[in-house]
Every structure is written in C-alpha cells, then in structure tokens.
Image 1 (cartoon, helix red, strand yellow):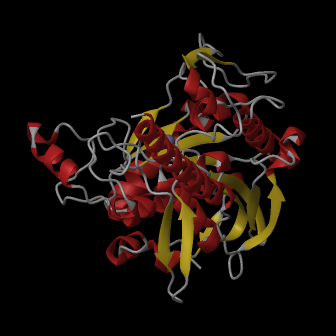
Image 2 (cartoon, protein in one colour):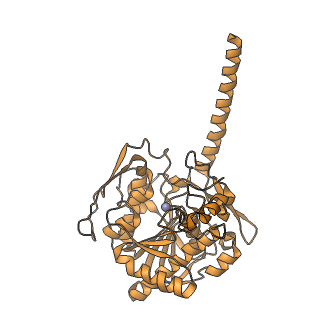
Length: 395
Ligand SMILES: [Zn+2]
C-alpha cells in the first residue's frame, strides 16, 4: 500500500514537473518573441523610443518604438495607437498595416502598434486563446504576430491591489468638463489595463509609465489627433463605433456620416466619451492635452462570451457557430453587430479601422486647414474586404 502511494506520488510529481517545464518554455518563448515590423519600402522616416517622453520607462519592457511617417510638406499630426488591448487583434494589425502602407505627403503620422507590449507578451488565463497569428505576404513570407491579453503581464507589475484608485497624478487638466471627477475606484485588476491608466504617472507601475509617456509625447509634440484602435465583443453595445471626446465630436460625426456612410456605405456609430469614465484615452488625452482624442471599436467574435472553440482560425475568420445561433434568436437583439453572414473576419475589422483613421484625419483637415495631413497609399476598403486576407497588405 505504501509502495503504491509512493508510485502515485512520483507519477503526479513527474506530470506536474513536465507541465511546469512545458508551459514555462512556452511562456518564456512568447514573452521574448519579437514581431518583425517591416519599415523597408514604407514611409517611416525615423523611429523614436517611447522613453524619450518618460525617463522612468527606459530599460523597461514597455519602452517600445514610435514609428514616424513624415510628409515632405509640413502640416498637422496624428498618433495611431494599436495593441492597447492585446486580445483585440484588429487594433494591433491595423496599426501595423498603417505604418507599413500609409505614405503622408503632408503632415506627420506617428504609429505605435504595440503600446501595451506587456499585454502582447502573455495570454489571459482560462480563456484558451491562441498565442500567435500568422499571415502570408504577397511575396510568400510568413509574418507572425502576438495574440495577447487584455491586461499587462503580471511579470511586469504584481500583485494587483484589491481595488485600483485611478488618479491623474501631477497632470493639470486643460479641458475638464464641469463637475467631472478626476479620480475613480476600479476593480484591482484594472491596474494592469492600459486603457484605465491615462494620463499616467511618470514613476508609477509599468502600465502607468507607458500612459504617462503617451500623454507627455502628445503634449511635447503638440500632436493634433490621437486614435486608439480597439475591438469589442459582438454583444457589447459600444461596437462598430467611434468614441469621441467632446472636442472631437464634430470630426467624428462628419467622418461617420459623410466620409464613411454616405461616400462608402460603412456604418459606424459615434458615441460620446463618458465624462466620468476615467483613465481612458478618449477621456484623459482629451482632458489633459489639446489633442482631438478618439477611440475606434469593431466587433470581435474571438473575444466575446458567446464564442465557442477559440483558435487562430476564429481570430482571423471571425466564423463562430455559437455567434451565428446568437444572431438568430431574440430577433438578433443579443448582438450589436450584423452577424447574419455567420462571420466577422479580421480583414473586415482591420479595413474598417484603417478607413476610419483615414476619414478622421481627412475631416480634421477640412475643419482645421492648419492641421491638414494628406496621405497616399491608403488601402482601399472594398479591396481589403473582397481580398479577405490582410497578409496582402503586410510587407
Ligand atoms: Zn479594447
């Protein structure tokens, strides 16, 4: 009996050691995997380090590259943020394609495709999501990108507090709405949510340091517009939408009604940024800097609660039988995206983001000619949707 117990213990121990080594290797590989952003042949004129705008970010995992695309003629400026939530691949991939394809002839476009690099470096526990996404380029190369977590990696900041008290640190508000709060208590895990940590704290947690650098970058360079690219579950109401700070509402409204809907038949809602929902780009960057702060959402079936088996195929094709069922019951009112076709592919989601960014930049130029940015080589919406393969727009 004693011997039998010893054998069982040894087997369990061996399995536990195997699991720890196997998952440890996998975790370590993902943590250190570097995505290959291709600037050759692109309009990227130079790169900067994000730590330029926060010295406390230097030599940390969050010190990412800022890709600068400068037109020959001076004009306005825009900052595109991808990867804020690393389990929302359309935001990340749209930013990569923007930096590899957009060719500004006037003004400057700054792109940070991996603003929450820490979030890209791991996956959410118990979600069963893929670790990577792969795409074949026109030339036949395979490009590999992270599918990550909604939050920063606990390796970078741990443990989470019971509750997270969001504050605006030392920042002085410039455009605070009357009666608005500047603090908010959130659940503890939100301390690792990049989009709850703006305007940021210089020597705070890694997530707060990154946010501080972005706010300081916008202030220092007087960047005219910031667009933060996200995705949301199909059952979440803020979906296929532009969320706009009150000072950016007109640009968002004209972009959605004229440039996107009337001219191209793309339906995108405009949502006002809630005044007391603190820590988010569209709120804090609009309150604490002079930039026009906007956030874009598209529906992502690989993120929602109704989804079935979650693998790379679901993240790319957006084809999920469970969402199809959800779209067919209760007169389709369970979902906020049109899922009647049974899919909502990454190609469509990325195309919507890219076209929305181009529309917002274009409309800023109409309203404020001194902030005009002109861009060549914007990928065509219909072409992207019909091709259904974003690899064709990767270098
Ligand atoms: Zn998000």
